[in-house]
Image (cartoon, rainbow, N blue to C red; front, side, top):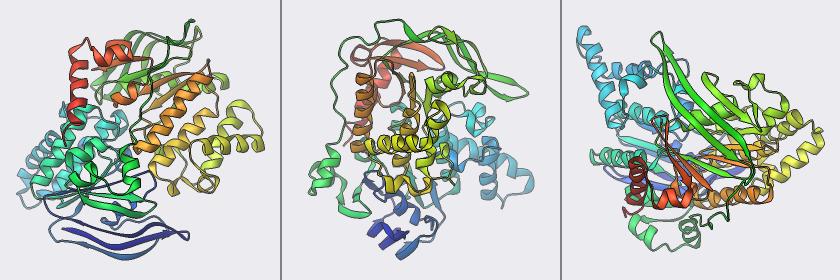
Length: 510
């Protein structure tokens, strides 16, 4: 059992967790929910003995004997060594579990443990994945590798921090099943999540946090179906509800054209693996295009090719009829500003040693030639519009939650005044209320700026429904595209059908 009593964590004179208590019993799932910055992650990390730098900590954390605490982070790339292949990362853990075996049997036993853990983590084609480096995996694939690490450790307590962030409905449903199976084996699971469908599917107990404090707790069915606190009711009612985009966007010519695009990932001496192949795809001015598909289908690779972040590709990407250089290093300032990319892992996209405000303002300075004072004023206004006050963004990235950093990353891209804005799972780590605000901001931007187009890479079909069109990828290929309403209500491809059905089933589990 894991237990926290009256935990208080203070950083710089500000309490980010204040008086929190919880019990995570073997064989149960305890879910912590709340808005970005509510203290969920800080509370969960306390079970690992990890606190923010300079934190003043009081209270008590108790762990029953019987194994280490496993951790599945919100940003999996942060705990995967970028210089080592996946096979090395997992084998190191597995070898420690089989030290008691004779030397000759250790290698085989370790390999079997690795493959078994990957199978339990729902990783398809494990042999191919093991040869890759972390940066060659999608966010969902990275998340599943980290889950395999926790399973290899044999932990009796597992802290899962947004374990389904950035995953498609099919994979998300499998992760839910896997975590339920982990709990069924007697492991105490502490789930930190913004995804209320996942919480409904998994949680036995729910703890609702706001501004570092617990405002409501109890059995999941009672809290989720009959909430007592006004904040809980607001959180549960925070699912975005937008009207369908009016009319047909971008009646003029395409602002972005893709022709014969084939992208590869280099592995080793065995050559390169083809991960994306699109014969034709257009984006019109003022249009929002949602790109959906399972983890590893090529969505992020497509976005990175458009932004000049993935050079190993063939074919043409044209902006207003002019070919874009493959690498961002070969693009001029106007081209860099025109196509902006907001990363799924916002924390990794910021310099941890510089204030967030300076990094956001630098976009206008570097790409538009704006003076520092004017760029700072514009950055503050944009950040405030996204719910980030000056006293918060004046600090370094480590002082912001994952959701807050995602909003800062969006503000940084907007300061370039782009023609094409590529958003890679930017709402996946946000609570429903903040998510509604971000998506509202994007729809307002599209409505007010006829020259802005949006590529929305997402696993969330509710988010995809806000786009004018949807493109569905599977195994690197385009299997279906069309108006959002038509694709989601009358899908024409079997894979799209399975994607829509999985989303419906996940939301109906409670």
